[in-house]
Image (tube, rainbow, N blue to C red; front, side, top):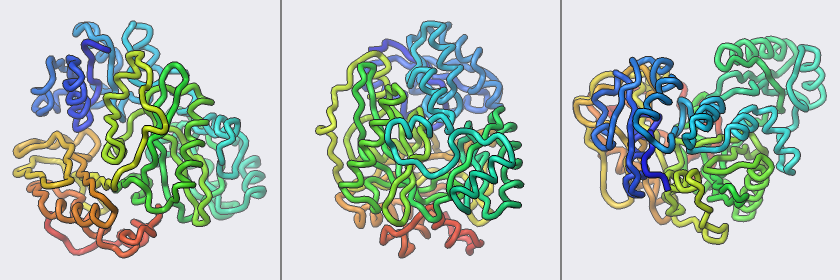
Length: 454
């Protein structure tokens, strides 16, 4: 096991990693930007190092600064969390060349599954169902039109190196395909320095279901069940839950087996997620692999009792995976609401600034992962998520009731937050019946609503 690691992230995930390390007896070195000098988790780390100004490109994305901090602090490993450099194959390779363990998959694996066209080809080889689409990248308008004619409209143009909903366009006819093809390529070039795109049949009103996997270097891979992430806005997740109310035990087994097969095909080790869409007929199709821990890993922790961050550290240090597939049992139901400093009544406009009062909820079955406190200033430079509110109860009905109670208790004075829209979503009849899909938020919550005190 590692003696000392560097946490290459910020916010709630930095705090989450520090806590996991402390329980394992691992010393932590937390890096921070000038904007995060007052972060509370810096007090919990064994050592702290400032790596640059507020801009992410000059701090949390600054590979030389992070590597220098790691060498100065004499750490054995770097834990990237999610976002920033977590899926950066070059960063993982630099860590290797400096004899510092990267807590995640090998750079070759990150590179292979990070390209969505390549990952799709891997899925095909592994016998995993994929959405009908192009065989590899689409190189021209003519090829795009030919593929669209073959699979039928509507189609989705997707950036091979995409992520976070960027580099994606939906087309319903030839003119919109041509426009979308060029728009997706341009956006992909700006966002990812890679304008490669491919085509898939657009599955309307699907569920978004993802499978958590763990793998060791000896080739052992297991899955820890699914998370339902169908409550989204513009492909950004708002609410996650486990298990999914939309799948049966037999579907869970088939999706889990598919995720494990793909992980083995890609020589995957450490923690990761295989994402699928589920159509109204119950058919599932591979979307992508997330070669990192995800924001919503906490939902899986609550229903399995497995600490995924600790598992990451153990696996990265060379430990064998002690869990067997038969050891994984889903217990109860968990729901997570992402608490963002955004105003849902103004098209989710970011709302940075000082939190005058921060009083998290408590009580049976409630967990809050947040780095915030009364007097904390939310910087405008980073993602707007300021915390995750989770509940775990014996069944879904009770979990929803506890979440609503916890949302009512949660006091955040100062910035606008997403707490009001979470209340509206959780009381909607479609959500309560488990009949929502990825278009649910746009259908019912896109129009402005009267302000509700958060």
